Length: 182
Image (cartoon, rainbow, N blue to C red; front, side):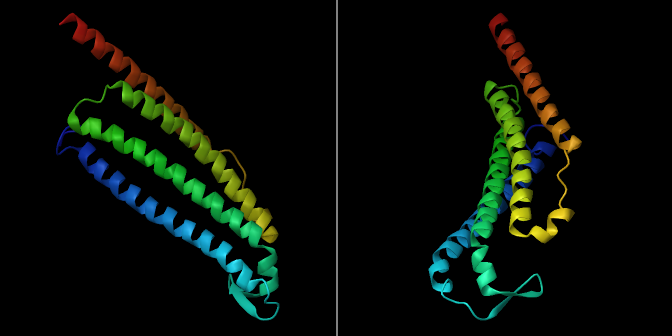
């Protein structure tokens, strides 16, 4: 099986990226709806001081949950931003794979796409830390179980994408030179 062109491995990967992109949009919509419903329902539940609600299979006082609503909202917003950045990365990769399917990968647009993917991967890594921090703020008792280490494989992937962008830049330059000599 060929690696680029119609009916190639790149075509299969493009389909997988299309499905992932659709799933990520469903996730963004779901988390956004949860955030909006939390913010809209707050005035209705803020007067409730009695009763209990099950969270993580432990009964908690509703007033305790109401006191934590800013942390819950911050967590949902952070997760929403995380998924949006992930969707941005998948979308840029979808565009790169479109050119692979056409058999013309060395375009200047792909250089920009790969550079923005690398920058978005950096943002995704930082957003991961923000998710962990908001989770630790929201539920202080899990603070000891949260890891804050640096992902060497993640930063290696970021560097590899920057290098690939430069490879694509050089390929686009060589293609441009070849077009001028013909």
